[in-house]
Image (cartoon, rainbow, N blue to C red; front, side):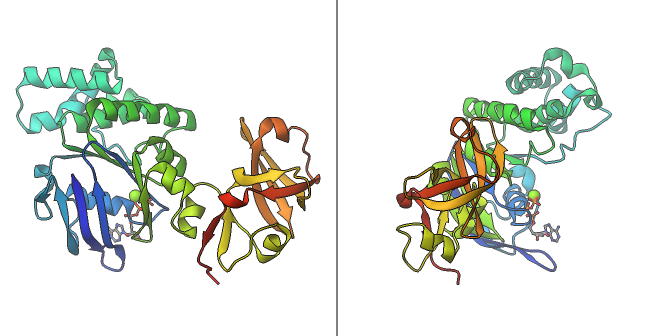
Length: 330
Ligand SMILES: Nc1ncnc2c1ncn2[C@@H]1O[C@H](COP(=O)(O)OP(=O)(O)OP(=O)(O)O)[C@@H](O)[C@H]1O
Ligand SMILES: [Mg+2]
């Protein structure tokens, strides 16, 4: 459906993408994930036709669109700043692209009503000015405005980042439902790994303009391809040599990384550690341990963390078969 072939984008003084190869399947919810500056927005803009690659090609539906102007690519884009027209009503904002295309008024109304319903805007909200809407409602307008043009591909650049945590999780669920309902191929950009894991069919992890891994959320989280991915997606501690020598079964040359949920507390014959921090997270509690002079994170069910206090000694063990080993960086 979408294919990047050795896509390279250089700006005046820097290279944003160093030859990216990527394929997105029809109907997929595909996420570009990575830290700030890794090239996510650049990749999206190259797909939309807002930035011209230095080299490499972009294919959509088997057609090379690298030199096709943006408006003829069948791509709808929602920007992080919603870029709505503040002086227009909600309905006028959603219909904007249809007016530009000179679609008949009656059909405009019909399509606006339909898409507004899909994104969860109420009919009476359509007549309001966009300035009267909350951030979450404005976000729905921005998505409706893209969808009303019936693009083949929907591009979303950090669409939820301006919203508070609760609303973000709610809209995340709605977005997933909407995408399934409409069946539209979606490329989503975020630097929020939790959001990426929750929403995506597949994730591409980018690092400094390069593809670090592509896979399902489960693959990326449970089988990270590199220490970088392991560190960026989810929490993980890289064990020091001293930590490895007090924990059993960790011989070898490679670096060993461990996720907090694979650290066990109160283990018979475990290594001696001390509780330094406790962060209650509802169902689980993140326990910051000091082991052999360095930190180690453990996540335990809150029920079993209830008895812990700062400074407590605990005996620590690992699920040795769940640790991640990567070629030594040393
Ligand atoms: N118009 C531009 N001119 C020059 N350099 C740019 C331009 N746009 C982006 N860059 C640079 O290209 C690199 C990638 O930027 P990009 O915006 O794609 O990152 P991003 O992953 O979207 O980051 P963020 O999460 O902060 O939005 C960065 O180093 C950035 O400074
Ligand atoms: Mg960006």
